[in-house]
Length: 318
Image 1 (cartoon, rainbow, N blue to C red):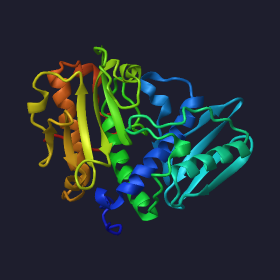
Image 2: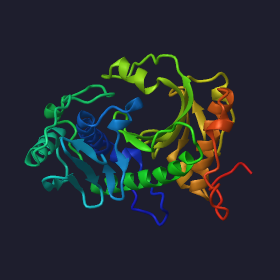
Image 3: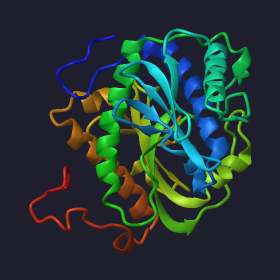
Image 4: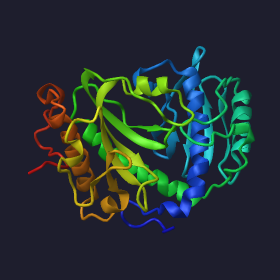
């Protein structure tokens, strides 16, 4: 694992932090399920996600009875913090510990704040799905790696947020799905989609049917593809010719295995202008979905600089 570089886009080899990544995946599932237990349903399960914060990942505000609480992974101070509108703040240090211990500490911390957490106590979208209370296999925490991962997310979140601003149709927030452990942003054409076939491990098909109930183009970052993770983009349903549509920048390709476009994180990090490289990938892969899918682009897209005559977008095809 490399130390943080002068660039804002740090290097973090997947092979150097796989054990920590897999443990964090389970920890984020626990925290995400607590949010899911109390937040009202929002289309496509948007109420269950986490968000990149100035110090890590947060649930944002979770309604609870007549008040609210928030849970945040602080990857700078290496703590899990629970903040309540009624009973103050509690937390504990993030360190190497089994998922079973983390789960017990989270429940104890919530109990101190008078918060109940009725969650399904096993992970989704993974195989095997070891119950949290029995998981002693995942027990790693490399603080330096966690910080570097958060900094990867920080940069991806920033550029994806700017990309999101070009769309005035229905579009998701830039948010972190703990099921597959990816940062995502999804645009919608406004048309219904055929029922999704499902098939995710330890996850009901009805979950995917809701998630993919409308025609979409989705993009994001996943800390598993390539040597340092990968950016991805896909369409559902996939329009004819999607895989062969030209996209950029150099290094982007269509994966027949994953049925989506991929761009290695290291290709962005090492580019002369990483922001522009990622923006080109996001825009051109969306265009592949929108053009081939015959989206009403005139009604769905707009210039986010329309109220500011002095600003220029970070990327354009010219």
